[in-house]
Image 1 (cartoon, rainbow, N blue to C red):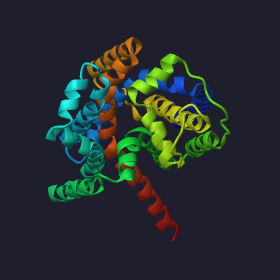
Image 2: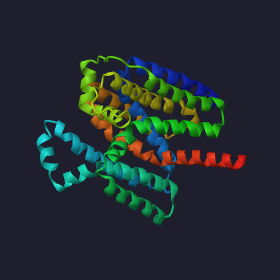
Image 3: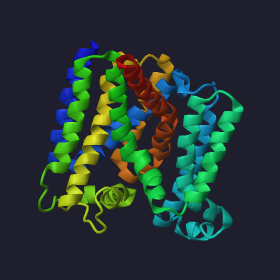
Image 4: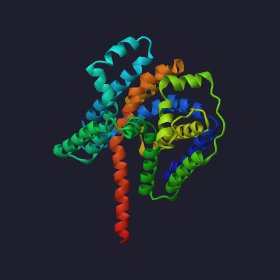
Length: 339
């Protein structure tokens, strides 16, 4: 497919994602997250590895991966209270210095990973990288108790910012590189879709089944809904299936679904499938296993895949920086050409 054909395909995928998000906001998200998500994580990590994770040096990704592991441990400490088999252990360990450390630094690990990813993509010299990473540590210490810091970097960045804002930036950067009107049209339609979601008047409540309600309650998905309601809309008390809650969920479902579909639609452009056949086969096998786990029990699948999910977000930070850098460079270049 040509770039233009892919652009037209993506317009269709956006419309489909929007319609389904309006009709089945909760069900669509659960399906996309469990079925499309794992294949996206696996194939994107393989593609990023092929491109050296867009960092300056070959082994840079180990540092980002280490910070992701620390964030994962922090997350596991936080959810062990909910498991009957680990509740007593969690109660004891959370009161120890180790438990207190991971609880206190959970958001900081994500913040440090973002700045570290930027440093590894922007600088080659060890001194420049070290200065940037030290700044991230000092900033973490200073901001740890800040509510906005926790919401933005602990909740929104690895979730809705990753699947919506960064997706939009990728689309804009792609449009700038291709210089095609259809690519710019994709960006405009994406913005229109988001505008329609938030401008639509969602009245009443949306009835969800027991399975859907339990899946949201048991896996902490409502944390994102509440964070968006509090931070973006200023709503302190919100039922997740009320009018405002429904609007937020429609946006989440649309953003996640299109984020995954956008990746798969661009197979012939970014060529994420051009990796060793063995690696691709392993990815497909792991994808089938992950779907089986989700089908057996959604919580089991979620816990089994949460590290992989976060890893693909963390490893993408250098690419996020490169996209922003490319957009800024193009804008500056255009301004110079005009002047």
